[in-house]
Each structure stands twice: as C-alpha cells, then as structure tokens.
Amino acid sequence: MKFKDQVAIITGASAGIGKATAEEFAVHGAIVILADRNEAAGQALAEKLVAQGVTATFHATDVSNLASFEALFEFCMNTYQRLDHLINNAGIANDFSFFESISDDDWHKIIAVNQTGVFYGMRAALKIMRGQGFGSIINTASAAGIGAAPRMGAYAASKHAVVGMTKTAAHEYGKFNVRINAVCPSIIETDMGMSGIEDDPKVYKMMEMAVPMKRFGKASEVAKTICWLSSEEASYLNGVALSVDGGLKA
Ligand SMILES: NC(=O)c1ccc[n+]([C@@H]2O[C@H](COP(=O)([O-])OP(=O)(O)OC[C@H]3O[C@@H](n4cnc5c(N)ncnc54)[C@H](O)[C@@H]3O)[C@@H](O)[C@H]2O)c1
Image 1: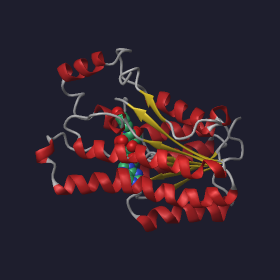
Image 2: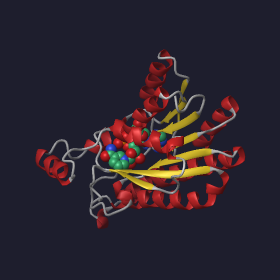
Image 3: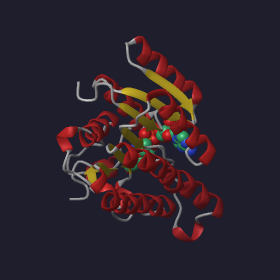
Image 4: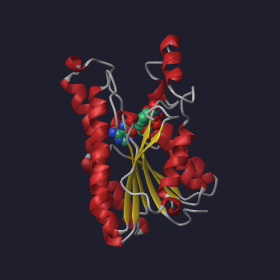
C-alpha cells in the first residue's frame, strides 16, 4: 500500500476525476480528505469509503473562497499534523463562446475557481510542506493548459496559469523535498467532459476521432496517473505538465 498512513486532500472529490482519484488514493492506503462544494455527493462518497475501512472525511469547500479553503487545511493539520498530498482538482468549464463574447461574469467565475482556487491551495500546502520537509502537489490542468482551446478562452487562460504556477513552485520548492506537478487531460468521460458534446453525435464522433487512440479517456485513467505521479515511484518528477490525452497533444 504505497500511501499507507499518508494524508491526501483531494478537491473536486464529489464527482468525475476527483472522485476517482480519492478512490484510488484510498485503495492504496491513504487517509483521504474529500473537499467539494457538492455536499450530498461528497458525503455519500466519504460514507462509502468509511464503510470499506478507509479513514475518510468530507468537507464542504468552495476552493474560490479563501476562508472556506483554509478551514480545510486547518482541519487537516489539527487532526493529522501532516499533509502528504494535495490534489488541486476542482474546476469548472466556461460556456462555449468566441473570445469577443466571453462575458465578464464567465471570465471572473472561471479564473476564481480554476486559477485562484489552485493558487489558494498551493500557497497553503506549500507552507505546510516546506515546514515538514516533504510533500507532493498535483494540479489538474488540461490540454487547454498547454495549447489552444477554441471557444474556451477563459478556461484556457486559467489552465495555462495552473501550468505556470506548477512550474514556478517546482523551481522554488524542490530543495525542500516538495514536488509540484500537473496533469493535462484531454476530453475525459465525466459530466464536465461530456457536457456540450454528448447531445451532438456528429461533434462527439469528430472529437473522438481526433484522438490518436480513437476514444475519450476515463476518470480512472487520470486518477491512476495522478496517484502514480504523487507516489515515490515518480520521486524525480518535478515541474512536469503531464499529458493524459491518448496522444492528442503529441
Ligand atoms: N473532463 C474533462 O474532459 C477534463 C479535461 C481536462 C481537464 N479537466 C479538469 O479536471 C478537473 C476535474 O474535472 P471533471 O471532469 O472531473 O469535472 P466534474 O464536473 O465531473 O467534477 C468537478 C467537481 O469539482 C467540483 N467543484 C466545482 N467547483 C468547485 C469549487 N468552487 N469548489 C469546490 N469544488 C468545486 C464539482 O462540484 C464537481 O464535484 C477540472 O479541473 C477540469 O478542469 C477535465
């Protein structure tokens, strides 16, 4: 069990990639702290994991709200006195619109969750991890964080920022035995990934066929990559923005 007695905070843990990641960490022995703004689904997952013998708690958290996010770290340190892993995964997508039509509201909403939320999480975790002398952070960026994402300008901006923060922190904190990496999924079969395309068979097929592996990814495939990247098996990876995309960005 590669994460035995290690403490992992996973944001966006109520659904999709975050949920699969929480389950994967739990399988490998971690103590998991689930954070999400969707209370019902997060609580249900925590209860399921506890019934399986996992030490798991759910915390209603809005990552774009500093006080709410910091309360989560306070709980973690008061309860376990350590934080081994932060998975900064919570995110939202924007309405599909051309750049000139991105509304102020949409822009600020996306940046608040996808960029500022990741910043809040990194800042709090890095302070703890530098002090304890170990730790790993994985940020869920996107293929939209390393290349163009037509009609997703705000989203692409936020995800490029995530990659920038990841690389910068890796340079600053490597000497403290803290690794900071990102994963960059392409389209993954989650509520977010399927929204806007699943109702249009033509667009769905076209996007699927654009992937060299001719299929979309599964949440579990991203989760396993996140867990591997967090583990000792990836002990010399730092500052990486790892594509999990079936070869799309190759
Ligand atoms: N699915 C994809 O195709 C895809 C591709 C690339 C990157 N990503 C990224 O992966 C991450 C997870 O996406 P997903 O596909 O699992 O999405 P999802 O919509 O299935 O799940 C996202 C979870 O994040 C939570 N969340 C949203 N805003 C929050 C906030 N402010 N505070 C706390 N929790 C919040 C939601 O309640 C939900 O449980 C996101 O950062 C997303 O941008 C997804």
